[in-house]
Each structure stands twice: as C-alpha cells, then as structure tokens.
Image 1 (cartoon, rainbow, N blue to C red):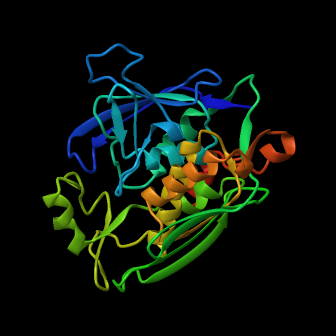
Image 2: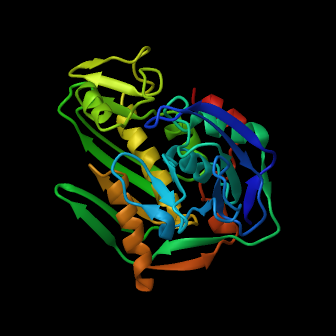
Length: 308
C-alpha cells in the first residue's frame, strides 16, 4: 500500500549553495499525490508554485539535483531529502519551503530520517506500483558510467576513486531491503576536496558549506571535526545520492544500480533513459511478497539509533 508521513515535521537550516536560511516542512498527503514541493516565498497561485517530483521536472545540473515546472519555479538540492523519503518508504508528501533550495542540515539524510521515524509513517488505502527494470540500461560520460539491470529488489553498487588519500578508491555493494538505507547509508555526509571549495565559491556555489555540514578532505587529512563516520563514508554518500536521484522516477525501482564515478547528472540521465523506452521497464502492482523487500519496510526509530 502507499504511505505518507503521520504528522508534519519541520526543518530549518542553511542552503548549501545559496547560503541563505531556509525553513522546510514535510506534510502528510493523500494517496497518488506523489512528492510535491511548494515554494511559499513566491507570490504566485498555489498550483503555479508547486513542483511534482518526476523525470519531466528534472533539470540537469552537476552538483545537486534540481527540479522545476513550466512556470519557472525551481527547487534545488533535493537529493538527501528524496533519499530519506525513499529509504523510509514514504510515497506521498507535500513539502513546503520558503526558498529555492532544501537546507543541507548536517550534510546527510539522517536528520530527515530521524524526524520521519519519530513522526511515524501512515499506510493509505491505495495500492502501490513499482517500476521493474526489464532490460539493462546504461549511460556514460567520459570514464563515468551508471547502469540499471533487472533484479528482484533494489540494490546499489558504487565505486569511486579520488587522488586524495583520505578517500582513494572505495567500493560498496548493498541490498536496500529491510531498512538497509537507514542503517547503512543515511548518516553519510556530502564531501568535497579542499582544493574544490574556492573554485565552487567563485562560481557562486557552496556558499553555505562548512566543516560541520560536509566532509572536507585535503590529501590524507580529513579537515572536518570528528573525522569520518564510516571509513568509507564518501562512497556511502554517493550511494545515498543515487538513492535520492533514482527516486525522481516517481515510484520504487526494482533493479540493480551500478555506478562508477557517477554523479547527479549521470544518474538523472539513467532514469530518463530507463523511462524513455517502455521496453525497458514495467509498472507492476506491489504484492505482499514484493512489499516485504522494499526500502523502508520493517524499520522503526530504533533501527536508526542501532546504526549510530
């Protein structure tokens, strides 16, 4: 069955790229609403300032996931929130915010997950459909690639390779069934190299970035206080991002995602390529057996703290 959040939860924090303070509220929504963002800071009719998360709304960018509508309304850096919703198995929500970008909070999905599990998740009296991958789909950009293969459940395999010794080459492969996202990935923070920080800021990006809301590395050193939450936190965060970017499909995906040096642009192109050809996938009703292996099934607030 479809779900929504039991009660509304609010967040306030700085936007990673814009640097402004943003207040955001995730509210319950009816079945078949999907995930909808509404910009409260815009003097427009309500329908015009809302953006439904879908592949048609996706705007290609390099450093975050951005969506927009035909009225020019955009919302940026939605990937951690989308990953939290997908990882908790929340299919319908109205998300209101008073700015153009989701707050970064601690740089991971954990604050969102923590609040969702505290609030509770409500089942709705409406059937759920999933997107089942029927044949391999792959996209490439240079030496980066992302791929979806047929599989009975969602799994993510990722490989990264950075020259900084604090990151280096990292590989991880996980099934996302039964709360694995909450336990294994949700607390992994966004990361960057110190050498990239000034470049981004000259481009008007990362204006809200700090050592507290991102893992910053330089060579063999982790500059952020407290170091890493996991020895392989960077690759775990890449998998978190992929989870959020796959959620732009608008329904749970049953398939195996493989990423090699992939980012938001490539995963977005992969979802677009998947949905562009009806021979690539089918929309299937989720029966009890399939529901039991979806992300978010069988988790509670204790699962999050068991991962701490």
